[in-house]
Length: 456
Image (cartoon, rainbow, N blue to C red; front, side, top):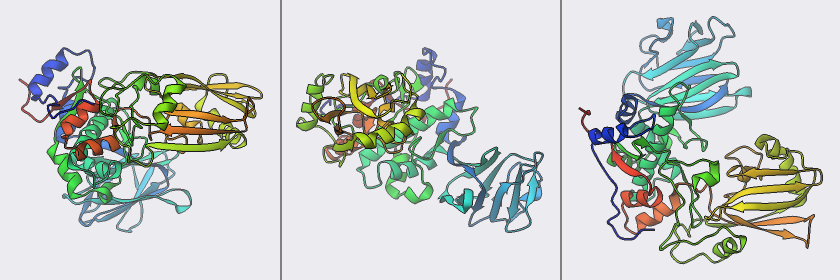
């Protein structure tokens, strides 16, 4: 980590950013009208709340409107509640009941419901068997679309009204001010990066850990609103384009290079030693084990409960787990390995993160790379169960294969790339501002202020 308070990021007006973008090969140059509309909030971000649901109810304390709905009287003046479901007719795929009235078939397969003033909308969506999958209050409007697998529900909200909820859900409203502001810039950059690429898609990102956790007004607070306001217009950029500013809970002492996680670089990001001074080469099992068991002084995030962790799994339990997870992950060598005999760490990055693992079984061997390694220890779906990180060493029970059990000694929680939220909190507690925090974790990026005059 660089010390001192002279860790300043570059804040320039929109005209200068456009000049940088003009020199960039990026298709998402910083001065595009689409980006300006997203930053200013005239074009909302689109956040998936739920998919494949059977019934959606939208209510508000004031009148609702359905702009563009056919027939237009389906949402009458003064209406404060609408319920939507599938009609079963190809010509009118949706039907809508306003204020409990008889459902009206719609000629649209996509409907937007908006409050007529600045009030929020309450969304309640139920899946199969009436199971409620969304029940919350959201700013902006709501879009409901008909699909072959049910209804899709998307929140349409200006970015700076979206961020306060994300900050509360992702890093916590009680975090220090500088950490909240750093999270605001990272989250704004992340969502706008994906919004620019998803222009032709039905939504920009999900409201879960697959995107950014978004719970509507329930996770907002005065502190999270202020952090969004104080950083208004600030984005991380590299080469004149918005950075995919990923982040995670806690690094364990060193962040990962994106190439070791997803097999490709991310502009503006690189592996960072997450502490005072400089790190060392952790590409060997011996060095990783030493680093995990005896962390250096000054490493950030050490108070986090998953800064260090241990997990012991029997070969029988892992055999059952891999039988479920490997088919979803499609490893090299095939998914059917039989009974697990050995787990072989084939390669590590300089940061110590495992980049390739082979599971050896009685009938075959399966090889995984990058972040997929974590999910092999769950059900194979990203964001569910699995190991907490790929920064780990493994001990095996027995003198040789087949081993009866495996104990994992690890550090950190998450993919390990970009900003460590626990590290950001600790840096803020030490007196660093959000610019210094961002420069520490995104040291190949610049902090750019997009709130400025129209370019000439």
